[in-house]
Image (cartoon, rainbow, N blue to C red; front, side, top):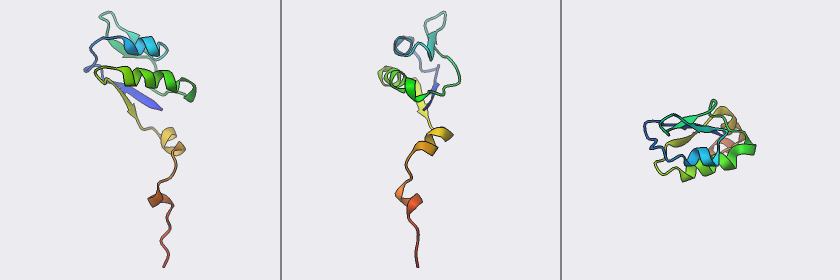
Length: 84
């Protein structure tokens, strides 16, 4: 899982820092700051997902990354062979 934080959308509720303080801190004005590069290990996924879902202004965005795409199951179009 990879996330990014759109600071222009943040209204400073601080819910993200409450749910996942290892990944979100608050600046001097109370607005969220992403700690680290946004790569979330599976062990911390639940806390970060709770922060993402509870953000009232949707400032936390999950973005696809190479590791996530490699773990996802292949789609039907990727696995179907065309036979003649």
